[in-house]
Image (cartoon, rainbow, N blue to C red; front, side):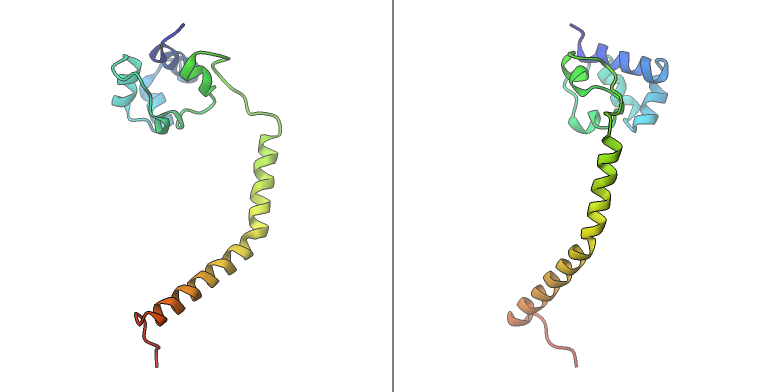
Length: 119
């Protein structure tokens, strides 16, 4: 089984032809950090670093099981678009809720004597 560093090298090879600087730039992973992982100096990747690597099977990258690269699951874009549309429909309710919370906070502060009414 390949080590994490070897699997990371393979992803770099697949995505940028082995160019670590280009890969670091495209993922916003600091080059020095990337080199430490590739060279095996750092062995346990942080989730924040893994999240920056796109189009890779995270299970393969971490554990070596499955295929290295992933493709966008069928319908994923449609699901994301539906969520955005649904959120936009509920946006008015969120605005109203925020206004109610602000009013309640002002009332509580007024009752506590922290806010004096404006004249």
